[in-house]
Length: 216
Image (cartoon, rainbow, N blue to C red):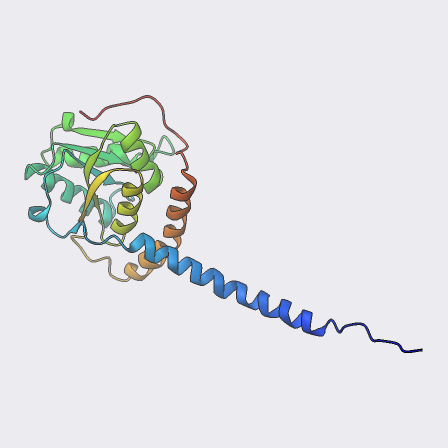
């Protein structure tokens, strides 16, 4: 009687191990491809106020109150307004608690620098860049704008805005170098770009919408 041995499970085990080892590589490649896609829009970024085409409004993204980024974004937005490039400023940021209110702090700083209060609107639910832009479109009815933030943040903001159907350009608000923080900001953008891509692919809605508050 002839007997046959059962097929060895060793080759299958090797293949499974190889696949498991490949998964992190595939994940990293996917992340880099998404990052490159999000970062690809560089053509509509301007370095100075004089270069920026006129737009109805500027969307000014919040940052930690009184931080260097906060001060530079407000100063850049005020320069835009005073140069006649925009007629309104939309301050969008975090107001997650009663003791922390980025949009009001931004508005107060801009008013102290000479912008009339009636030409500044506040979005108190701009917790993320995607939320800020979605709400700018659907709550404040903004269709064209200058995005005001630092250079490292602009490609992601432009990517989101364009996918939301907004006609926008970006203005680099980096009046001061972030110094040692630059590497951290650049690394953070790799992670944030993944969330931005998935927000767009899923057509996610912000946590808060509410009634319309037209800017004009």
